[in-house]
Length: 323
Image (cartoon, rainbow, N blue to C red; front, top):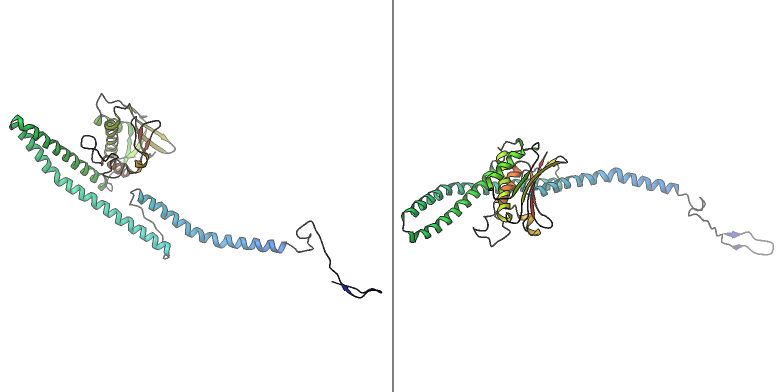
C-alpha cells in the first residue's frame, strides 16, 4: 500500500501485517457464516437425494441375499417380488428362475428315487421269501452261502426302504397337515421304537410343551436321531433327549457322550448319501440317508435342524420349532 509523501521523502510502498489469535481474525479476514451455510445446504441435499437412492439399491440386495441363503440351505420355495426393469429386477427374476429350476430338479430326482424304490420293493421281498424257503430245504453245507445272499438282500431291502422314505418325506410336504401336538408322547414313541431296556436313554421333557408339526414326521425324525445315537455312541454313556421353551421357540436336543464328528464335516451331515466315515460297511454304517430324512421331515414341519459337538466330548442334534 502506498504511503503518502512527506516533506522530506518521496512516496514509497509499505506492507501492513495483521496477526490474530483466531482463524477468521474475528471477522476481519473473512466471514465463515456463508461457507457454513453452503456446507450445510450441500449436506442436506445429499441426505435428501442420495440416501433414498442408496436404500432403493441396498434393500432389494438384502432381500435377494436372504433368498439365496435360503436356497443354499435347501429351501427352494422362496420368491422375490421386485417390480423393476433395471439390473436389480433382472437379477431378482434370475434368482426366482434358478430357485424354480432347482426345486423341479430336486423334486424330480426324489420322485425318480421313490418310483425306483417302489418298483424294487416287491422283487426284493419275493427274493427274500424265496431264499428263506430255500434255506430250509437245502443241505446244511450250503446254507452258509444262502445266509450270505440273504444278508446282501436284507441290506438291499434296507437301502430301498431308506430311499423310499427319503423321497416320500419331501414329496408330500405340500399336502402334509401341521397341527398342535404334545411333544412328550411323540418323543416317547420314537424312543420306545428304537431302543431296548438295556439302552441308557433319558427323556426329560415338560408334558406341557406343545409344537406345531406333523406327529408322524416328527416321530420319524426323532427315531432316526435316537437310532444313530444308540448305534454310534450307545456304549460311551447316557443319551439325553430334552426340550426347552424359551424366547418364542421350542428347542429339542438329542445328546450323546460319543466322540462327535469332525468340525469341518458338521455342515454336510444332513446331505443325502453323505457319511463321515467313507470306509463304513453294512456292519458299521448305513447308506447316508438317515439325517437327510431327518432334515426333510423337520423342514416339512416348518422347523430347523442343526448338529454340533459338545465339550469336552459328545455330539448333539438340535431341532427348533416356533413356540
